[in-house]
Each structure stands twice: as structure tokens, then as C-alpha cells.
Image 1 (tube, one colour):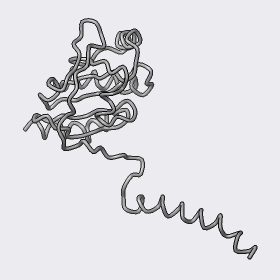
Image 2 (image 1 turned 135 degrees about the vertical axis):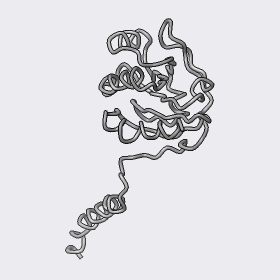
Image 3 (image 1 turned 90 degrees about the vertical axis):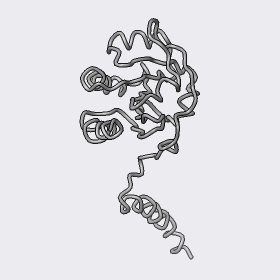
Image 4 (image 1 turned 60 degrees about the vertical axis):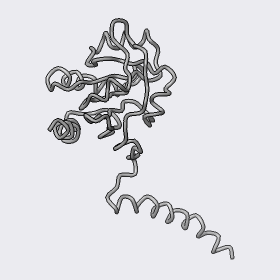
Length: 178
């Protein structure tokens, strides 16, 4: 009986390996959480401006796609990493980007945008994160492509890199422009 009890930890370990291995063997990435909103209309929202002199954002603005909607925050280190790319996309690719500042403080936003630049057509202030919850945001940065008919066409989680833009986001935007 004592010998059988020694195999209990081994059994748990084997079970854990199987749970982790099945998604990997199927070719799925267990770190990717799919969005229930892809293929559905943009949630209704209307956010006040996050910056003086820059308009806020509402659902009626972003449904004039294809556009990008980028959730960001001044406290987010990886947001700063992708910000230069967003600036390039807005200025050189002809893509309209709307920003939604997530759970931040207005003075911090102004300082951050002052430092990094403003690639956004408008920036909404989601102080309590309610709009982010409606969109399914679980961390910033997250970027969404909105189709011309106001439907969420793609959700990109994490900081976008040049390769991500070229291989994933840009082809989807181009397809929606046709």
C-alpha cells in the first residue's frame, strides 16, 4: 500500500504533461485567448477626451473602418515599445488609429503622449476600464481592426512589432479596403 502512494505525485505530473501537450500537439497556442467579439459589431461606447484639444472616441467614430482601435496606458511599458510603430502606421500607411487610454490618469496621459507623440485621430479616456471590459480587454496594449461595416475583424493582443504589422495586421486591413 505504501508503494502505491508513492506513485500519486507521478500520476499528477503525467496528467499535467498531458493537459499541456494536447493543445501543443493540435497546433494551438495555449497562451492565445480568442475574442468572442471578433465577427461581431463594435460594442456601444462614448468616451470623453483623454487629452485637451483632442476629441474623445465613441462607437460611431470607429465604425467608419477600416480603422485600428488601440487600447494603451501611460503606465504600460510595452505600449511605449509599440508606439513608434503606431506613429509610423498613422503617418506613412494612411491608417486611421483611435486610441483608448485604459485605467490611467489624465496628467500622466498628457505627459506620455507629449513624450511619445500622438498617432491617434482621437483618444478616449476609459478611467475605470468599463469600455475595455466590454471589448474583452484583459491587458494593454491590445489593438483591434474594425471593418467598414463596424464589425471587429481582428484582435491583436500585446505589443505589435513590425513583423506583426506586415504579416498579420496590414494584410487584413488591405483586404478590408477592397
